[in-house]
Length: 640
Image (cartoon, rainbow, N blue to C red; front, side, top):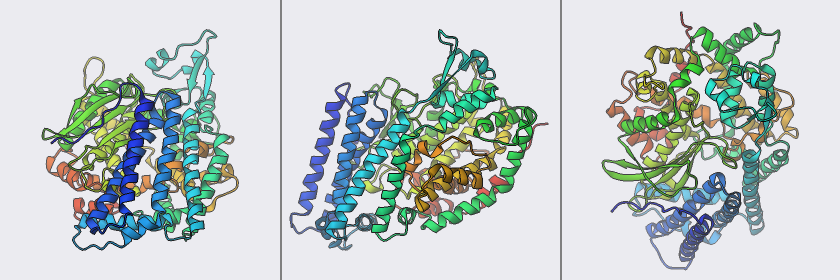
């Protein structure tokens, strides 16, 4: 029998959402009551009941969280946020319920298979990390903290989502922008053009606009989103996380957070930061010197910051590597790219995507069923264009957790791409985020909900997505979908120049990522009184771009909500991703033996094994730093 798929409504979303969540919470309560009714049960029976509560709570939380970020109706988004708070309260209460803990801890492992034993261990570990063994007074405080953190996370994210800033420029200040961008931004009656901090405006403008003052004006607005509202929110958020960690016996929030991650300890983050900063120092300073030297051909400035870096990086790639992003984008029409992405990943992982005319929350959303060997494996929703009130970044959201034999995994890709021509960096981002979506679907055939989909340690989750980016840089892959208006495929020599240009700037990129990592980590560990001063000091220490006075980057650093102190995940995962990719033959990226081994040993297990074990299963060894170091040390080779 085919696994169940969720039927979304054509209208009446508020009623539908309320009814679905009410039903799932009622099912949760029924199973929790049964667990505590005193009936003698085997360990397998207890775990099965617990799993039912996991399934219901995860599905309730997924749909409420998704709709709070993407639904076009502001009232529905607010209602969804309220239901998220309610669901999180149930999750918190469950984790602090000592009677439940007593039932679970009284089980033994006799008769359990390896996955069930692993599930039991994780459940008991989660109970202890929630503070279930503390006094009633302490548990009440932990409950208050959890509920308040849910509200603060929502406030922080909502402020970022809704704070769209803008500048107004003359048509002449669009000099350097691609023609289709100019045509899409006609002047108003007063003769001025409005540009916003949304990605389809901000990224092209900071990359191509020749007017330095206008670039700086829009950059400063982008780096000040969320300010000042999110300053107090962030301070309270950090304080409550720290309080929770200390109540539970940890030195700080990063100590608490890393206890269940690959990296293991807070101190290991600090060591990782310094190791990567040192590793990228030579390449990063080389990149900065090249950018600054080119900038000084236009002015006498001795500074280089975010208002100039993308623009002069593009200039250098155009002049030294003969890569003009305005030419490159002619080959990346959105519709062709989306179709190409599905073709590439379908071929790579043995999947078929069938377009489905199904209800969705906005007409922009494309829906596909995912099949393997003629069998439905899941459903995906692609919500890829910006609109008012929508999540502003790029991410994969769960809609349904897959459970083997019962229901198929369903996931959503939420991005903010233009409708026409795309920058190649947007194409890379799309491949990256789709990597999460494929992981969710292929890893979604699990018995235990907690291991379904992208359920490994959190500092591994970016590795499969980062590795999939490599297919967006391969000439043969790109030729299958990257064609210009006449249908001519992107030339192989242009892709080779793009790859050479890609090597330029990677040292600067790594140092910039280490700056973000340090902000994420040290704001949590040290909890400075003045966030602006601390962030600017960290940028001066780790980034090779100069701080811009008067900006407040951290107020719109959305990862401080979801990733908390663990932004290091991106670089940690990149080290692993480079090692994973080393197993593929660069001359044949679709080799089914390697691709299917990767699919079956990295993606399909979901979280049923530790990430290090998954990697060892695929590589035949533990992961190492060598492939990343070789990539970082490879110098860019200019054309000619």
